[in-house]
Image (cartoon, rainbow, N blue to C red; front, side):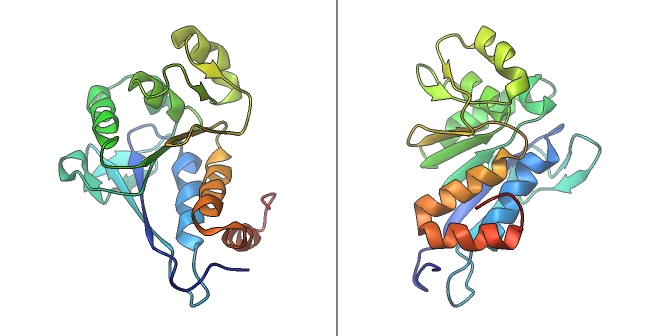
Length: 199
């Protein structure tokens, strides 16, 4: 069963930066873009934001973004993907952290994919909370953030903050959020269209 035709449209903003993992942002982008009501009206608008108009992903893919940090758009959800650019500080890293920190008052839900949790932790959001990250980065995360309770779960929901663990977990995360927003029918329909392991 799909959601009613009058379900409110949600605005999703995806953070982009150099050396971002492609599937970390592309998975959620696909899921939210597929969400529609019974009249085929999109339930989510999905846009990207970065420190520059074009970023270079891990692997070399170049992506043009919709907004820069100076635009300060509002949204219902900010997705923070992972990749080497999330874990390893490089050019513009402090600007990325400043943007994430400044987003809290404007964006009610912030969620990370994979090692995007490093950015949330360094922004001070996860102090004393539960979180998850990529399984290969558990030791590194615990060493840097001993006061954060790292769990092995695919998704850890702390209310206004959600973390997900693993590169493909952005798909699980986006489906999880769709269900919270629009119900199980919406999730099931998008999962069916993905035609994969997701239910």
